[in-house]
Image 1: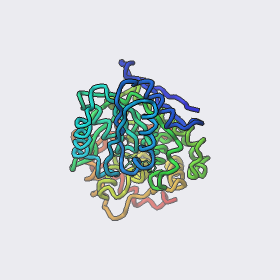
Image 2: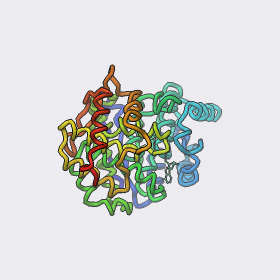
Image 3: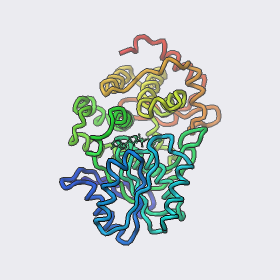
Image 4: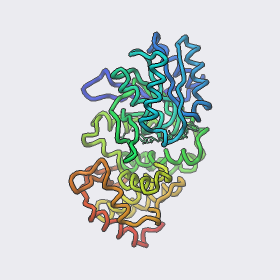
Length: 374
Ligand code: NAD
Ligand code: GLY
């Protein structure tokens, strides 16, 4: 069965859209192809994907779209974060224009967050905006990046520095695509799932804690419920603050220190692992600030550990290294960084202003706290 979650865009119902969550009995990619054909009967589809997902799903999906009598073509680029560049965007644009794309053409992102972010940015700027569909195939993309309209590419000086807010016309999630994901990529997505529980929904957090083993065995039925809940939570946040003027920053819990960890490791530590470490560091900072109780910090560490995620700041960098690496954070205001912390499990607090000295002191006291070890 396909479940649907609506993303209501404030003051612009024409931009509101549905997230369709499968699997469905007759195959979700068939359902998706039929639904797209119904919506865009006279448009040509361009399936943007990476070299891994091309082999796994895009060729089959291209045939399903053709089977609906719709012209369709695959544009693929090498997999991985290193491809999330202006150069790849230019390559895709060149292919689209050479292949006769026009304002009615539909850009379909089929893949993980890298594919979704680049394809969405292409869709936002090609002819000043063309229809855009997200078909996320990683857990991270299904619970986070495919929903909410943040699209963009990296710059050598930082991640996601060039981009736009451009909402998709629909998102189609097939949870069964997660069976082909590597353990490392799967865990990456789990960190974002824990973030939703920790910052927004204690019931989700408790469900995760009760079912950690089943989650690790990728039980499709349970995953479908969890992914649907994460999509509902993200939809609520986007509805309150589409352009991240304030409340959307609730989704940044764990991300300020997390981004510093990613950056210092030259992106060798993947995003999810870095966010896991970041959530623990920021929860411990919240404890030191007397915002959060110790039991909640321990619960967070136990859940992340159970899910196979790291919780300790890598020791090969010093506290001042971490503090310095947070300073180019997009959330910086004058000399302060606005942190998103939690004050209990399921309750995030945005815009906690902290200076570099504050953060250094908090991280140092964290490092010397033997009592915190699990
Ligand atoms: P990714 O797109 O690089 O995918 C990870 C790997 O999994 C790739 O090698 C890909 O080819 C492979 N893959 C994808 N689907 C697969 C499947 N079903 N089976 C087997 N392999 C598969 O990385 P990601 O973790 O999905 O996304 C990370 C990106 O998302 C980052 O660039 C990050 O900045 C971005 N992001 C964006 C937002 C947003 O709101 N736009 C939010 C969070 C993260
Ligand atoms: N990934 C955070 C956001 O979409 O705002």
